Length: 204
Image (tube, rainbow, N blue to C red; front, side, top):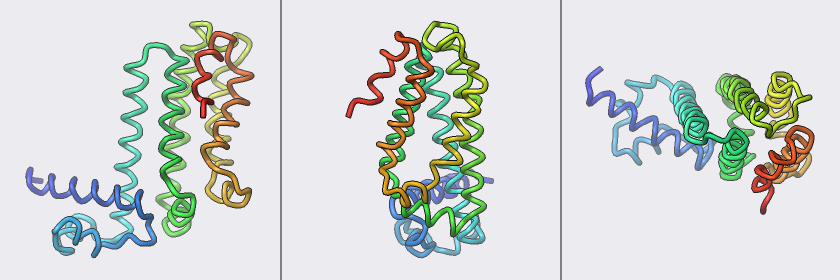
C-alpha cells in the first residue's frame, strides 16, 4: 500500500470514528462521510466494502487510541494510586461525552462490533491488575486484598452491569453512577493514604 493510499485510509477512519462518536451510527452514512471528506464513495468502498466493515474498523481505531492513552498514563505517572485516578478520570470523561441512546444503537445494530468493545474492556483487567499490584506494594492498597481477584471482579462488574440499557432503565447518569461505584470500590480497597490520593475522583 502506497503512502497516498495509507493516508487516505487513515483519513477515512479518523473522520468516520469522529462522526460515529459525535452523531451515532443511526445517522452515519457513507454518503455523508464522502461529502465531509470531499472524497467519492467509490474511494471509500475501495478500502471498506460495506458500511458494517467501516463501522467496525472505525470503532477499532477508537479502541486503539484508548489503549494507547491507558499505556501512556501508566508509563508517565509513577504513582500507581494516581495512575488509577487518572485512568478513571479519562474513562469518565469519555463516557460523559457519549450519548447512551447512541450506544444502544451501536449495540443492537452492530452486535459484532459491540462484542469487540466488551472484549477490549475485559482485556483492561491486566492493566488494572498491574496498577493495583504496584499500589499495594507501595502501601496505597490494603495488604489483605487479593488484587488479582479484585481486578477480575472490577472489570467483569463494569462489563456486565454498565450496559447502556442499565443506565436507561434505571434513569441513571453514567458519570454519577460510576463515581458512586468507585466510592464503594476505593472505600474497601485503598489504605488511608491511598484514599487521600483518590479523593479528587469524587470532586464535582
